[in-house]
Amino acid sequence: MKNLLLIMLFLGMLLISTNSSAQDKIDKLSDKIDKLAEQMAAQQIETSKQITELAKQQAITATKVDGIDKRFDSMDKRLDGIDKRIDMQSNLTLGMMAFLAVLIGALIWDRRAANAPLEKKTEKLKEEVDILKQQELKHQEKELKNEALLKKILQKFPDLAEMA
Image (cartoon, rainbow, N blue to C red; front, side):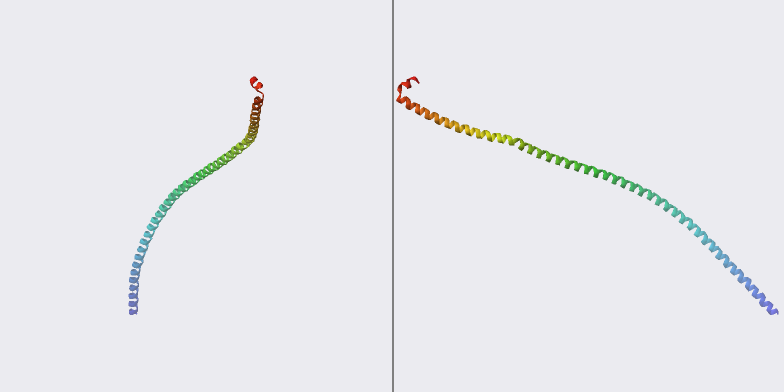
């Protein structure tokens, strides 16, 4: 029994020493876990700060992008206005060219229409001049014949030559 007691005592001490060494290990592990928890908390805080900073930068970038989008929209509106003005000017130019073409056509038609009666009158006058020239030629021929006849008569009747 004494041996048994000794064995029990030895086992008890062993247990206590093992227990104390296990306790030391548990304490060390607990300290390491606490340190790791503190490091993780610090990293989590740092990560949260970085996320907050990135969110701020993203918000700033979003406002800058919105500003750029607004500028593009205003430029699009300006370009649309310029396109409308160019279209209006080209339509106006085409209208003016069409008006000028119609005006020139009307002037040409008017000149031809106005010249047609004048051409007819001119043609008529030319015909009348030709007729008058022919009549004058006939009259001159008759006059020449009459002069020749008068000369013959005066040669035959010298008494009449003294009267003339």
